[in-house]
Amino acid sequence: MKTRIIGAIAALILAVVGAFALITYVRGADARAADGAELADVYIVQESIPEGTAGDGLAEFVKVDSVPARNVAEGTVTNLEDLAGLVADADLLPGEQLLEARFIDPLELAARGDVPVPEGMQQVSFALPVQRMAGGLVKAGSTVGIVVTAPTPAPSEVLDTRFEFHRVLVTDVTIGTTASSGGDESSSTPQSGNTLMFTVALGTHDVERLVWSLEHAEKKPDTYGVWVTLQNEATDTSGAVMTNESNVRQ
Image (cartoon, rainbow, N blue to C red; front, top):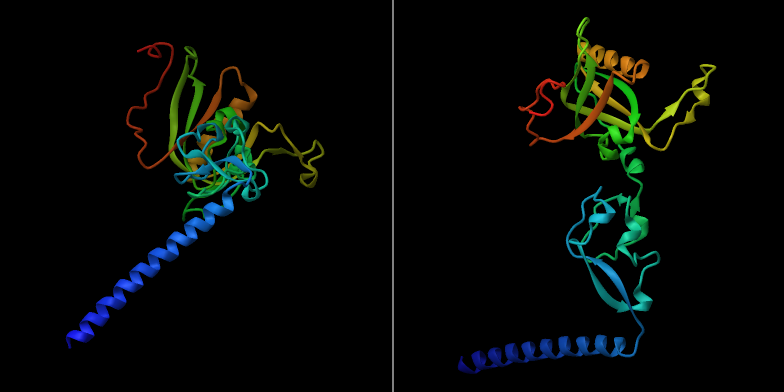
């Protein structure tokens, strides 16, 4: 019995020693393979980078590492400043090399996706310049707030600005287009690259309110205006008040 126990212990010790020797050999082989090889510095993802992350805010997510030049992927990023104005087109995982192809114009990212319409609601679309659309960060599935500036009824006609809508569901986003003058929808032409076409889901009366605001903003841009904010579940909307020249500095 003692002989069996001693044999088992000896076998276990041999297995541990053998595994250690194998790991040491593999590490040594890697070192020998890299020895004398041409190295190149690349950016490696250290923490997961969420889709939509701005290219000029990546410093905390990546680090520079040296790898054999033959292992450098095509299109690897050599300067983070080259990604300014772009966003990640998908989630990037730790260990990945940072590639230029994984970053796109925020308008392209915003134009992706499709979201079902909640029961009882209907969809309405409108186009605004991207600077009025949270810089193009809104995409299908986002919830937004809509701020409207409009004059009070005569005779005072003071300009008031206030949130008209909160947590409005965005069901689709596309780069804006405009129909031709002949009314032929098939011959629409792209607007400026700074314009986005949003489709949102609203109840019947809210659609009327939004369309009223948009039509007046189009006809009288000097006195009417519409802006969109990007909201989420944690957004505090309790502080909204009608704002005009009497309280704008309070």
